[in-house]
Length: 375
Ligand code: NAD
Ligand code: AHE
Ligand code: ZN
Image (cartoon, rainbow, N blue to C red):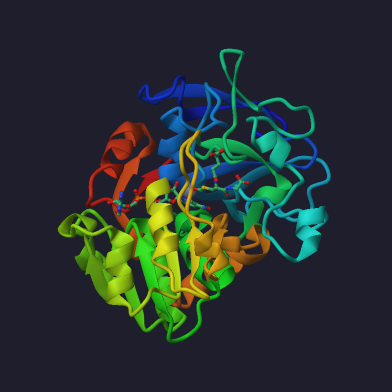
């Protein structure tokens, strides 16, 4: 198949909110600096649902969504040196070129090399898509488009991993789990003994709990409007549970009262701007740091009294938990193989690519963390 167009199945989002359609998609061969990957397993993340909803200012249609996956390199374009056909890989929506201003800064995991193309659904070299259906181009998504049996990505967006790792599990290391762990370890740098509050106990929030537990947090307060979340949350390290619906007072006040003035660190893992405000305002005066992890819809804005920051609270955000993708995803895979981090525990459902619309429905049910699709 090397150098040839491959026809395979992919789930195409033709329009916002309309069921995805499994189509025969033509996938062009990888050009210079590109890699074609046979995707074996992909999970769904709430960011896929967000873009599908039409609320993502970068959402373009028709497109192939999906960004939390694992597969095997099928072929490589000219000049690709770091992966070979047959390598086991995880596509990375956050690239790492190691050459751009961002990569060289040492201050961020964001990479500038391909972002201008991945944000508009095309490949960098010719600003075109590698996907088409009967000659009609289909946009890429987040530089990954994993809801397809084959995808083409930039070489700076591929992490080569240990072939011993089960792809049906480690696909989760493409987004949600690293995001939560890294928000704690890299972005907030939570110290032992800290009091932590987590708003939203989905996969990302639970990974924050796991990260906080390993960092030695003394109290991990989980906040969710769905009380059924608490039993699972305990297994990930949450020590106390608060449901805002059980209280008359604003949730920030409830948390401040519970913690003698506020928490050391808080994490918003929902994508709700009023909760982001509460997460900041439940932080302790003088030092409390709040990290925004959730993705809020187009047009939404955060607000608080500047006095909150004047008096020492810090507001931060994180993308992919601050992990440098190509360098650190393989390290996370090793940590999983050594049983130092959980992955299997986040997988609540397994379906096939053909059942993807059902999988999106499942995401709205409280009992679903991650649903992994066999592609
Ligand atoms: P999820 O839907 O599984 O989890 C969200 C949780 O928040 C649910 O348990 C829900 O019951 C709870 N919730 C909803 N409204 C609430 C409220 N008002 N108060 C308290 N709890 C509330 O989602 P997820 O997959 O864990 O993702 C969480 C967010 O993180 C999404 O916005 C996603 O787009 C974003 N995300 C960001 C990054 C990043 O790099 N920054 C990476 C992955 C995901
Ligand atoms: N297109 C969206 C941006 C969404 C967003 O913030 N994405 C996160 C990853 S979410 C993964 O589930 C991210 O990494 N952002 C940094 C980047 O470079 O996109 C919007 O709202 O505009
Ligand atoms: Zn995601």
